[in-house]
Image (cartoon, rainbow, N blue to C red; front, side):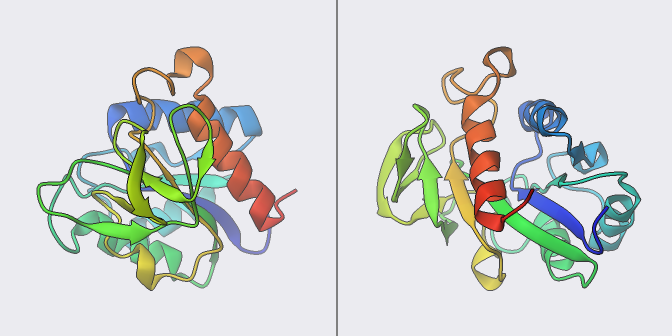
Amino acid sequence: MAEKARVIIVTDGDEYAARTIEYVAAQIGGRTISQTQGNPTILSGSQIVELILQAKNDPVFVMFDDCGLLGEGAGEVALKYVAEHPKIEVLGVIAVASKTHQTEWTRVDVSIDRFGELTEYGVDKSGLKDLELGRISGDTVYCLDQLEVPIIVGIGDIGKMARKDSVKIGSPITMKAVELILERSGYD
């Protein structure tokens, strides 16, 4: 593994997200910290960093979820801790849109709609292009604007989007987001 552990952050942790991320990681030779699956995130940032540093190869995929809590929940506290840790290099973030009870949003550098098209607009939970330029509404996205990360890619509900991101068809939307992050980060 590199001097710093190279990580891709995913702002979703439900069963579909976990299955999708584990599939994508296996396809590119990365690792998933499966213990970060959960809705909400139950591990602390320091526990997650320990697990990341034990991974045999990278990129390491880490899931964070706030279960729809408004403001900075446990998932975001852990996410910030991991993203700011000196032994971690965040390659990028997959920011997952959701229907939150109250509106939380973040800027995104680009979004990928459920048809696999790149767009400068945000996307909604279904993966349809939204009206907002360069931002999405989501659950565990409140703190992303505070972080210095190379790229934030917005997508709809990971592993779902009217079955257009299903593992059965190769999770093409999530795969495209990961490929974009790896390309932009210069990962080889």
